[in-house]
Length: 73
Image (cartoon, rainbow, N blue to C red; front, side, top):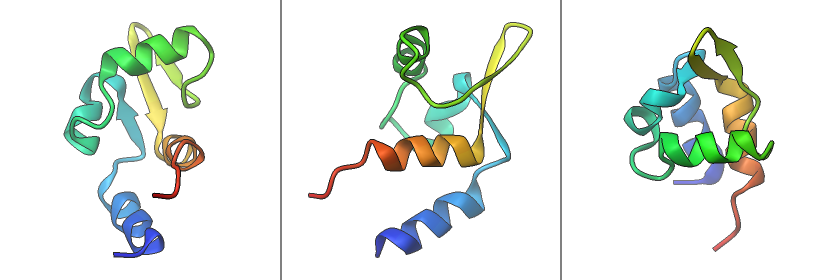
């Protein structure tokens, strides 16, 4: 599967807002909510929206952030 095909598949299956607490439902165990919380506190995570006590990530911003951290194998 090409990188473009993978990206299309991911984009098609993600909701518009992804709760940090449910990140493993969408990305498996690649990234944990705790890891994202640590990155957020250091200002290194994806763009986020805080709704009360909940943190959500807009789909496009999360995907852009993931792509920026991806290395070629």
